[in-house]
Length: 110
Length: 115
Image (cartoon, rainbow over all chains, first blue to last red; front, top):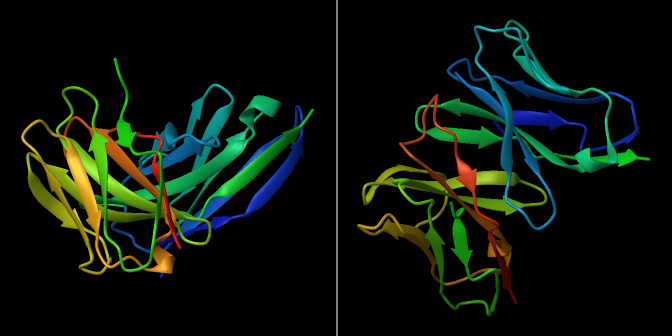
């Protein structure tokens, strides 16, 4: 059973556009929500993270929007660049464990 | 400083065999977590070790086991390999046990193919 549901599975965006990836969860015990970026042949790297007492967090071109009542959170990549082409994973933490979404393959077309 | 090192990078094994994967965490990091990554399931947590003790275990059969040494290096063992064990196995290290303020740094993984 997938504890964190991620969509879409793949995404193609024009350079300069906005990329939006969504995640949903049911477990209200989750207390921390990071996003990871993974390039081919590399391990995932932490991109940005948010706690449920905050509705939005922005770091450069990357923004997390968090809706606690809807149990949803999303990653927005503004002014998407070809270098952003990678797989993105959302995750949620509770106890001693992270639960990951199934990933979104983002392709930014020049 | 050096990142998380996983060896070997690639491995081909036959069904029924066993395999041992190695992870050297970032210097000073005492927590090591292992994940299985497959296209359909994403990253799934296997187990976490801190100071040579297993702190948490995911929902995997007993064929999957691990250990951590006094220098924080960790090994993961899979016995009686099955075709479905083919995956990228990722190791993540952190200063402290997995928690709210703990950033995990991932290695490049070991690609295991079972034939």
